[in-house]
Image 1 (tube, rainbow, N blue to C red):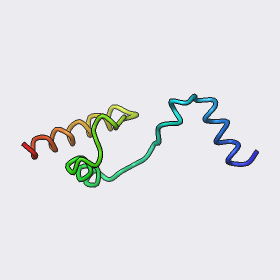
Image 2: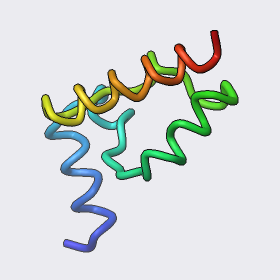
Image 3: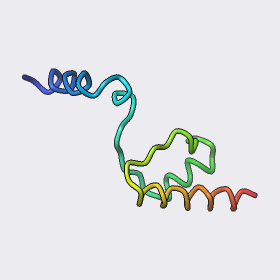
Image 4: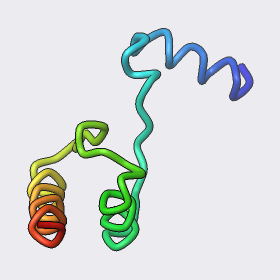
Length: 68
C-alpha cells in the first residue's frame, strides 16, 4: 500500500469531519499577528488539549484588550 492509499484509508476510517482539520503548530507571535490583522478568526481554531486551549484563550483575550 502506498502513502496515498494509506492516507485515503485513514480518511475513510476517521470520517469526513476529520478530513477537514489539520494538526499544526504555529508560533504564538505569528498567531497573534494573524488574529490582530483579522486574517484568522478565533472561531476557526480548535485545541486538542487543555493546556493549548488555556494558552489560546489568554492570547485571544490579550489581543482583544490591546485592540480596545
